[in-house]
Image 1: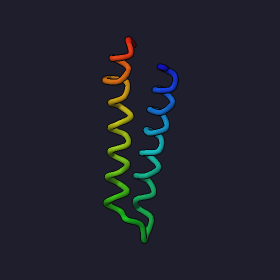
Image 2: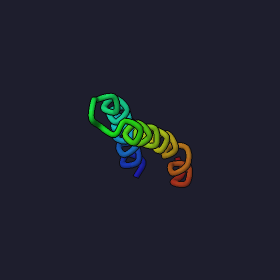
Image 3: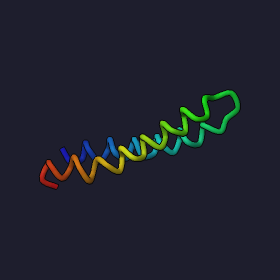
Image 4: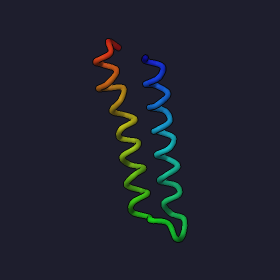
Length: 57
């Protein structure tokens, strides 16, 4: 179960970087994409601290 949480956390972390990078492309919803990237990175950091703590990690 810890491996699944790690993979999800890593995907959110890298996806957040992609969202923040694509936010500066012309014609995209800059604020929404950048905020989505911030939320994805925050969730990816929260998973190890809160979810894995309950799993006994």
